[in-house]
Every structure is written in C-alpha cells, then in structure tokens.
Image: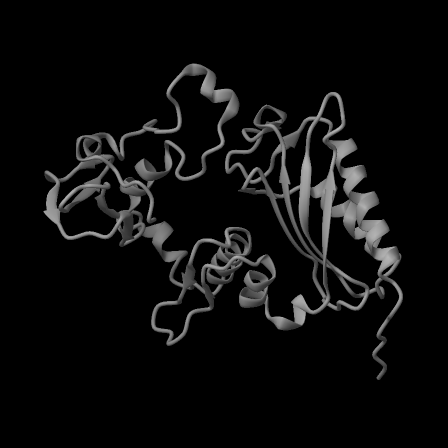
Length: 287
C-alpha cells in the first residue's frame, strides 16, 4: 500500500486487538469513511500466521521491518530499505492449526474467489494498480494498471467483449428533502449475453452485496434479455455516511440503507428507461 506509512512509535501496538487509526473522537463512529483493516484483522492474522510489516513514512531516510506473533512484536523494529507506504506479508497461514491447514491444501476452490474479489476492486479503484498471480504461474490472472477511464479498467479485467455492450448510467436524488444519493455506473445493453449475472456494487467505496437491488435489476432485464441470458452491472452509490449501516454483518459484506426501497425504485426506473431508449438494434444468434 503506497499510503502514508506507519510511524515507528506506533509499531508496538499495531497488531494488538482493537487497535485502529480511524477514530479520533467518539462521534467519528457515526461517520466512518475510511477502508482498510478492521481493528481485529491484523491481530487475527498474527494468531494463525507469520506476519511481517515493512513501512516508511514521508521524510524518513529509511523504513522499518518488524515481525509479529500472537498480536505481539517478536523483536524491535529493524531499519531497512523500503518503498513509500506499508507492506504486510502473511506467511505459513494456519501453521499452528493442522485441521484448518488441511482444508487449504486444495486451493482450486478458493483461488477463483480471490480473483473475483480483486477484479471487482480493480474496476472500481481505477487509480490503483492491482495484480494477482497464482504461485507458480507465469502470468497474472488479474493485472490492472492505473487509468483515468472506468471502461478501460473493465476492459483490462473482463475483456473487450464486455465493454462493447455497456452503457453509462447516472441517477441522483439531490433535490430530495430527507435524502441525498448519487449513483453512476455501467450496465449491459440488450445484446449482452452471459450465463450468470455479474453485479459489482460499491456503496461509499465499500464493496457490498444488496440482494434487493440485484433482484430488482434482474427483473428489469428479464423482460428484455433472452431467458438464459444475464446482465453485467457496475454501480457506485454515494450516500451520507449516517444513512448507511455497515455493521449489520460480521464481514461488512451487506449493508442497510436509509430509505432503501425508494433508492432501489429510482435506480430500477433509470435502468428500465435506459434499456428502452437503447433498444433500437438487436442482435440475435441462431443455431
């Protein structure tokens, strides 16, 4: 992570439970916008793996490297050469949990999930470089360079055939008295053909699932697409932080929104209008 880095004096508590840099005052709990590790994540890693952190802050002549085990530093930080920001390396995962480690011996089930996860982030954060390569492979399965175009990011990750059938969409509700929300994204047109729905949804830059929104969009497409075909959808929704509850699920994968039904209805109507206006040319394949 080429961010600000971690100060040397903060390294002793870095992997202790409940450590966080997101809060300065109690009121900050209501308006958390930052991403990154939760207070438990780094600590949890140290209990099941060997964690090494290399970091440097701006203006320092050198960085520091330190190892952790069971939430505690194993040694004093050692000066070292480093690049801007922080590198967290986790090795020998579940080395001390034999039963759990055996479940990882076949990585064929987990690796596609990792690729899918990183692909979604690569589409949304277009100013960040992402790379994911399986151990022993010659080429990366995900390799997305920094770009100024969302379509270029989608093309790099999902291919040119997907981009060819995408339309830009924007929805806003800024005039509402009790709510402000904006949505922008890309949706597939009537010529896009896929066996499974691809829905990439970010709310306030947080990757989440919303079953109700997915069901509503699929319902709109069901009237237009052939029976077995599914859409491609990318949406980025921005809401006031106090209108989003990110703590309803332990993994923060699902969120709850204020006036959720109203937001979904406006997005659904916008998709429907967009599809109807683009429905001048249809391509049908026969066999």
